Each structure stands twice: as C-alpha cells, then as structure tokens.
Image 1: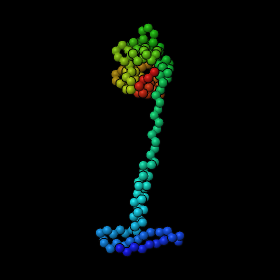
Image 2 (image 1 turned 120 degrees about the horizontal axis):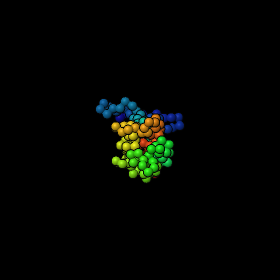
Image 3 (image 1 turned 90 degrees about the horizontal axis):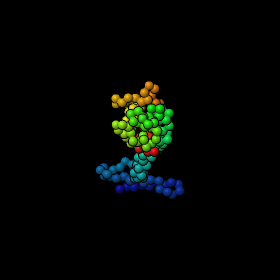
Image 4 (image 1 turned 90 degrees about the vertical axis):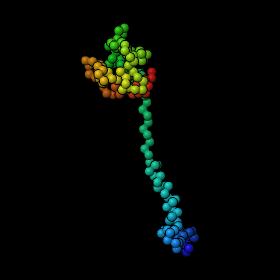
Length: 154
C-alpha cells in the first residue's frame, strides 16, 4: 500500500491518499473523503426530519354558557316551561342532559349520533329545528357540535 500526505501551510494534515493494489478493495477517493462521506451522511439525512411543522394547538372546548346562549336565542320559545315541545327542555344543562320524551338528545363525544345535531341539520329523517324559521347559522351549529364532541361538559 502506497500512501502520501498533503499538508496545509500551518502543518495540519489535509488528506491522506492511499493506493490499494487490490481491485476488490479499491476506493477511488482519498481516505479523508470516505471519512467525510460517513461523517456527513447523518447530518444530510437528518435535514428532512428537522423541519417538521408543529401540530396546530388543539382547540379548546366551547363552554356550555356559549351553547346556552344559542338555545336562549333560538329554542327557548318552544322548549321551556311546564310543557316543552317533545318534552325537550333547553333551559339548563341538567334538563338538556336528561333529554326528551323518547331518548337523550345528546350523545357525549358523538355529535353525529346526537338527536340535537340531527334536528339542527335536518338529517336522518329528523324534522329540522327550529321549524318555520331559518336554520341556525353554521357557526352556531358547529359550536354546539364541538361542545358535544368535547364531552358536553357543563
């Protein structure tokens, strides 16, 4: 094996080049180039993993107070008092969670399976609420859906 050295002007070793006579083990670059390739490979490969976009923060669950404000504005005229329609009283959290004459109107964590959302959207052969009025604004329905999805907490 024949090796030669090259130096900087200050005496530091620049590179070491070895000629290996065996064609089986020959490497066309100087040994320092091989070392540089192995040293830089993890750095180069890690660039793709360093620039990940952080996940957006989880939205906070709407407070029941916001949901109750929607009920008060749009639903209380029919769903309150001694004889609310369909026995669904929307005047407080406790009575909302009790449900109506047939079943609970809210399934915590599952807005699509909640009778309340089905009625607000007029989905699955459920009469759209409020009747004889324009539908609730999409942002209001989404707020109620997000509240239910987050567990329908008081």
